Amino acid sequence: MGWKKVDGYILSYNKDSKEFMFWYGVEGGYRPINVSPQEFMALADMFRNEGPIYFNGKRFDTSTELVGEEESSSS
Image (cartoon, rainbow, N blue to C red; front, top):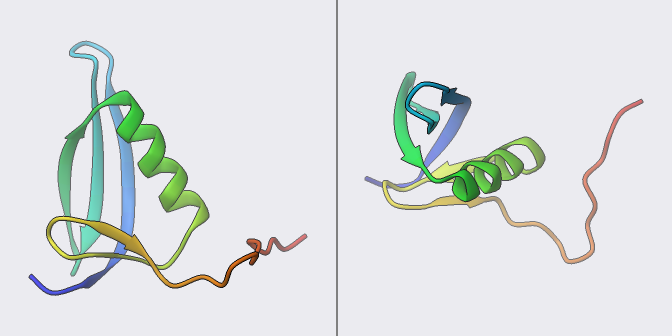
């Protein structure tokens, strides 16, 4: 699989089984990953604060960002 831009994501938690699930969207379909609580928090932070994000089948990467560049926010 080559690099694909991630279209979206879904965060979910099953309170009965205590499982954290991270769903990522690529090419119109969503795929789930079981993750630890630490991975869940790291992925949530990455996807909320960075972008665009790409996936190659094994790894999520952000686009290149200049050193010292801050995220912009609109008021």
